[in-house]
Every structure is written in structure tokens, then in C-alpha cells.
Length: 541
Image (cartoon, rainbow, N blue to C red; front, side, top):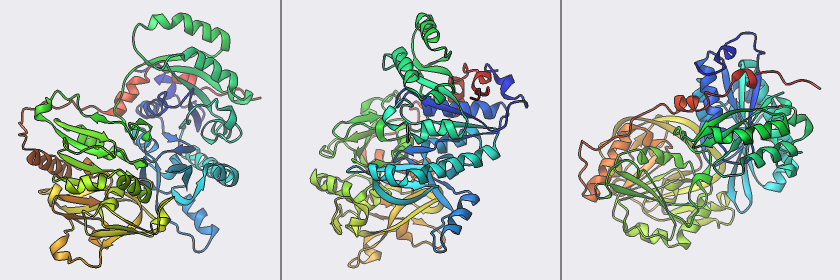
């Protein structure tokens, strides 16, 4: 049993205790530690929920909006758009699953989605309410964001025994301490115990711990119950002198040194992607030789979103997912996938400026566009100035599908189940496919096209026009279904088509990775963190 689990199951623990997992910097492991704690607490019989007051990411999922939020919104204005579903950051979606609770917008009440040119989309309680420059958001909309975050946390605290909150970036950004919603304000309004996470892999871990604690506001500093050092490799005893010194200087205990490991949870944001001018190959560590493998080229869109859609492909033996710059040749590609994008209009301009549209038109292999990628594959974007920061009203698309997309302020966000009758790149796939939609714009057939001769519709759903789900022509297919390749039938059909096109046999004896539960692996990673220290009450002033 992990250390401290007896304490975790003790009914004497105060209800609605909040643990804030804060960091000395970005990408120190906060998301993984939070997911691990959620699963470990759930396994110990604790009713636990994740929370992140404010997230900045273009990696999102569609979830339920709580009844309390919808009632409040509906009361605010009689003609308010009150959708049943909203969007949250992928990390909170994953953490909720690890905790064994249904993901809702309360788990991430404020989501900021970068759009380029210093602009972001402000999503509150799952609903996009506007596009703002960063300064405008903090000056005119931050109070609304804070109120939404505090109300969401209060609802979670009323429904669960423990809330594990994830901070953002560094908790020691002194230029933001008066408006640091995910860290400082969360610690205050939730009365949280703070676990400080520091990454040893990047070096300077003790300096980062000391500097962070020195820069915290006094009332937040008093809430820090301990430190977790992450991503450690080597002889643990070599850290002891440094740990002794940092504890003596600060009075804050180092609760655990966590080993380096990647449980396999989705990346939180696009920072994990290669730079737009760099190439990165994923899936190359499966033991399959290059001669027996195939490559899926993925153009690195400047505003790429929901790139976790590609993870199931990279996990297939013999499949290499290669993120490539927009000016890259496609000579070595066996297939192409265009991901989602937070700004289809401006990413289309970037594609065309790099000449990628011409190289894709000349490419003769299977091509799939997901969400914004579907829109890019069409003949044109209409009302593109609604979507793009620097776009004109109409922009010519790549032109591989005889469709056009018209943008408006409306945004569709919903989990979905459709029927598939696979053709083109998904030939042979059939049955039900599930995933989610998050997009603005509606796609339709271009006026001059004979539908029967030029385009097919592989997806159907009740009360939906098939072209609003997806379209196919030849070996090109586009769809609004995020999570397409998480469906076994669709993934198997696409992978088979890639190997068929490449002329590479796919022997049945290829090695396959041993499957594991990423939540259990994350739980094991944080097993040395003592719950009694994390769940103790913070002394009041």
C-alpha cells in the first residue's frame, strides 16, 4: 500500500480539502503529479476531483456543463446561448477520468486558447465568449474569470472530499501575483495546501526551490506543505546533502523524489510539439525496422490544436508520425494528416505561403483532415475574417475536397457518436465511431459540384447533414470527428490503407508494445508522496 493511504481513507479528514500542485516552472510534471494523486486517492476510496482554475492550451475536450452553470447563464439573459456541453483543457479531462468522475467544465472553468498575433479566445464555463488581446483580457475580463473559477471550485468542494488543483507555469511569477488565477488566487479562495513541484532534469533544482519560496506572497508561502522533486535518474542518496540544506534554509520538507517516467498521458499543450521549422518523428521506438515501416507526414501548423488525435497512430507498430515544417517535401511520406487548428484562416495562409498546398495536391497517397484540417482541404473559406486575425473575407483552400466552410460566431462543442461506412482512406471501416466536436464554421458542398459524382459522405448521424460530419473524394477524407483514430475500426482501416499504398507488407508477427494503464502508472509514480502531509490543515492566521 502506498505511503499514507491509511490516512487517505480516514473519515476524520476534513471534507473538501484542496491540494494545489504548483510548480517552480512550466513542464515540471504538475499535470502528471495531479493525475497520479487523483488516481491514487480514488483507489484509496476517497471521493476526489481535479481542478485547474485557468488553463492556456489549444488541446481541449468536449464535456458536460453542470446544471448550476446553465441555470446561472440562462438567468443572465433571456436570449443567451446555453449549450449543454463545453470545452476544457485535455489535462483536466484526463485527470477526471483518473479520479473516476465524469469530466465537466467545473474541472477547468477558464480556458484561454491562443490564436496568434497576441490574441486569445476566452472560454468561461466551457463557452467561448470572445477574442481578446492578452492585456485586454487581464484588464477587462479577469474579474469574471476569477468569479467563475471560485464558483466552480465551490461546487466541486461541495460534491467531493478532496480537490486536487493544478497550478500553471511557475507560482513565483511576481509580475502576475495580483492576477495569478491558477496559482495564487486558487491557493487563497480554496484554502489549499500547496505541494511545490520542481524538475531536476533541467538543472538548478535547489536554486529554483529556494527562489520560488522566497518570491511567494507571505500568505501563500505559509501554505506550502512540502516539495516534490521530479524526473530524477540515478543514485537518490547523492541528493541528500542538497535536500538537507534546502530543508534547513526554508523549513519546508522535501516530501518525495519522483523517478523519471512518462506514464503515457496526453500532452497538455502545443509546447510539446516541435518548433514550426523543425521535424520530429514519433513512434520510432517500436522495434520495427525502417524498411518495414510507413510514415504519416503531419504539417506543423503554427496554431495546431488537438494533436493528441495522432497518438493512436504513433502507437501502431511500424507507423511513424512525422511532424514536418510547412516547407518540407512529401517525398518520404506514405500518408498525410492535417490536424485541427485554432485559427483555420491564418493557418491556411501560412500553408499557402509555404507552397504546401501545391505539394499536397501533387501527393498521391491517403490524406485525412481532422476538424480544421477538414476545412483546409476544401475549396474555400467563407467569412474567414470571423475566424482569422489577418484573413480576408474569402480565402481559397487547398482544393482537394469540393466543399466550403462558412464561419460565424457560433461554435459547436459536443461529444458525439456517428455511424461510419468507410471509403477512401478509411475503406472497410464500419459501425459506430465516437469522439467529440469542437469547431466554429459549417461545411457544405460548393455550388458548382455534382454531389453524386464528386464527393462521398462516410459519416451519418441523426438530424445532421452528412457533409457537416465529413466528406471524401478519392483518397482524401475530411471530418470534424476528433478522436477518430481512437476508434479501432477507423484506425485499422487507415493504417491498412497506408501500408497498401506504400507497398509494404504488414506481417502478423510484428512486435506490439505491452499495454499498460497510464493512470495506474501515474499513481505508482507518486506513491512516495505521503497523504498525511498533503491533507493536513494549513494553520490559519
